[in-house]
Length: 286
Image 1 (tube, rainbow, N blue to C red):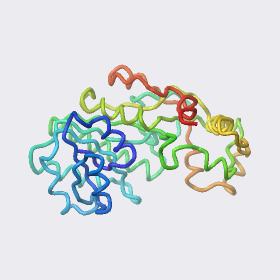
Image 2: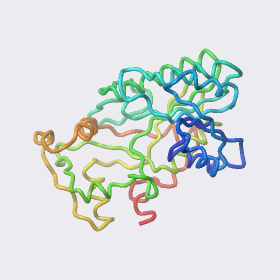
Image 3: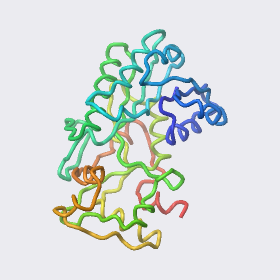
């Protein structure tokens, strides 16, 4: 069962076809036909309405949880509601959860492994920390294998908003080199393959950084994309002037710097990246 079957969920579903019987939770009646077209059995329910989730119990032996937390607060009430529903009948043997690299907070450009303590700086990331803790406790108490995937920026040529092209066309500034931050990425198909492998190879209550091998600062990433697309490179600005020109969301991304280590993902999940760098991923498909 896929909970939160958006772009990555559909990519995962394509890999699972013919191997398992697929179901997906959706809160939108308009998506029912689309899920069926992808050979996925839709289950209508809303993670914000606990009474609508009873039909999830006992449906699946393996669950991939890709649904985002609520937009407000410090806890993930959606994950709490999902786990309550899954307790009602035979419980799944495995849950794979798509978390965020934002749980690490600002690491000042340091290399980050999964053993580093979480230090979420935003309510958005704190809700993910809460979800991770709930899932690990659920796994320990039920005996299920819970794999937490910490995911950075997702990109793909065939993903809605999945490339920097639109931002480059708007000439949104980036930080000058001395103020810039390290950023991490994963191509969407590689992420879906990581979810697939974690369903069978993920260790109990284990966390995995899911990112490619690139080691780039944010401005260099946009410069690379601009050169590939034949667009002007974005203007560079000092951090002191960024608040007057950039949105709060962009500023939050530019306030955290880290370089994620993906050794555990490769060794334990056995994932061989199809797109080991953003250069290879952005170049694919033009």
